Length: 116
Image (cartoon, rainbow, N blue to C red):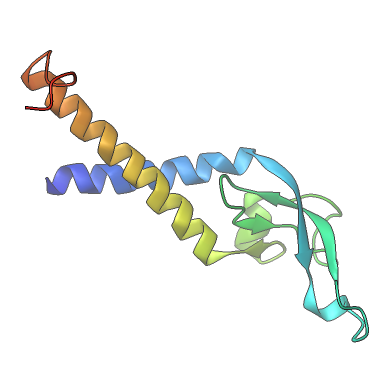
C-alpha cells in the first residue's frame, strides 16, 4: 500500500510537470502596476499548468507573453504553490485509483464488473 501511495504521488508530480505544456491566457492582477482607482486591474497573461495554472508570466521581468520552467526557477515568472499542489493531488488520486483498478483486475477478470 505504501508503494502504491508513493508511486501515485510520483505519478502526480511528473504529470503536473508535464501539464506545463498546456498554456493559455489567464486574467491576472499584477500588484505593482495597478493604479489605485482601477478596480478591475486584471490583465491577460500567459499561464501554464492543467487543470489549475501554476506558472504565470510576470511581465516586466521575463520576455513578454512567455512562460517557462527556467523562468519559474529563476523567479522571472510567478510560481503558484497552491494550484501546483492541487494538480499533484488530483493526478495522484487518479493514479491511485488506476493502481487499485489494475490490482483488482489482476485478482479476477470479473472483479471490475461485479462489486463483490
